[in-house]
Amino acid sequence: MRLSAFTDFGLRTLIYLASLEEKRLSSVGEVSSVYQVSQSHMVKVIGQLAKLGYVQTIRGKNGGIRLGMTPDMINIGEVIEQLENHLDGVDCLSTDCQLLPCCELKKALTEGMKAFTDTMRKYTLEDLTANKHDLIPLLRVS
Image (tube, rainbow, N blue to C red; front, side, top):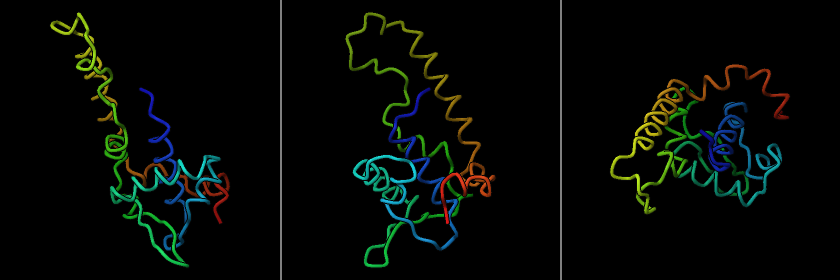
């Protein structure tokens, strides 16, 4: 299973925001800088995280971004399922595959994807930031 860059940076953004002091605001530019990714890409990622309620955006001169809920309420499996476009493994319906009437590959891949998401559902953002004191220097969080 390979996650898209979009989902990867979505998860990294959540980890970064969870590593900040509780009320501290961050910015798209700050997160982009930490992960060395373009601001335009990060705007899309953070916009989707905000739309899903994982990130809160505050407008204005003193605005910024922060987690939209506590880390223990953010389930990693759910985040992945909501950010990933294709968790089904293969897209059998959009091709003229000769195997479609009796394909076992689709069944095996579906089972594998379910096992992956079931495993990821066991973790919350709080679990991923349990080593917060080790993360802070790596993320240059002040």
